[in-house]
Image 1 (cartoon, helix red, strand yellow):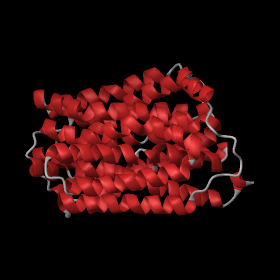
Image 2 (image 1 turned 90 degrees about the vertical axis):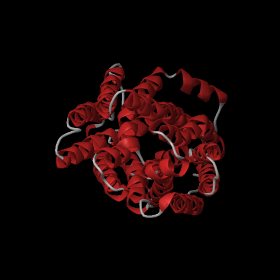
Image 3 (image 1 turned 45 degrees about the horizontal axis):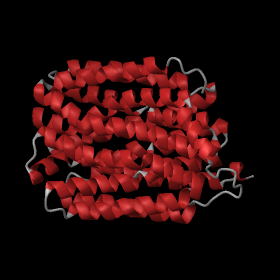
Length: 384
């Protein structure tokens, strides 16, 4: 049976590689934030808008990509989308003005968003339920792995060379996915209109989308702005600040794998998901209090809070797919990721605006409230 073949691990590797390359862009842009600010002479709010561009693009296309994956399969969607992301990044590397730069980053996000639903949907098929939490937890480590690669590689390169490296990673991920991923023999998952309607009417998915969106606020606040905060407020170099972001990714990898495996063992995605949300809220609140503490404490607090702020995603991703079932998994993942992208599109400029109007402490303190609200929103959700 395909579900228990060794091939499933190759599918997992391809999906993880594809998501890693896309995530390197998502987290690599904050690493390049000082260079973006200097290149286009931006305020903090302007930097927030620049980081927002990628999220705006993903928001516009995540659900359509998910629906297309249900209809034509993962391989085509992943290859075309991720390859297109690489092309758009090459254009952004040579953009002569901020408006064109913003538009090309948005285009890159719109194209690369294909990865989220396509690669996750492929893993959903090839792994049975008692391995799925671990498999999707491993797959979702791609986000911190991409961040780790970006944090380590980008600071010495500058804006143009950094974007070209990110483009090359996306093209390589597209090629690997095209070679490895193929459609299963069973054709049970052709999208039917009633399935889209059922997905959009599923109140459990809406609760999960809302709760996950609130969780994401803390993640975007930390991963999007920790480099600039340490660079501006504590005199870190770009490389030193990026190293802190890299440490956050290492902890996030461990939390995603461990949380996914734990959810398999206890037969629940929700319990670990709620606990990670509580830890994210509490640790970021402590970080906000410690912003003026000795730098070793500040760095440690950001690493812990950042790790927990990213530790929930694999659990939420798995739960969304399982709530919908295989036939609607692409649509469900597209729906959930669209909700997250909507949050991601709001947070960078909003957070930057709050900090500009008040202080970093107020900004991070306010962001700490949102995961707690997310935990409360998930309370009515019983299954999973």
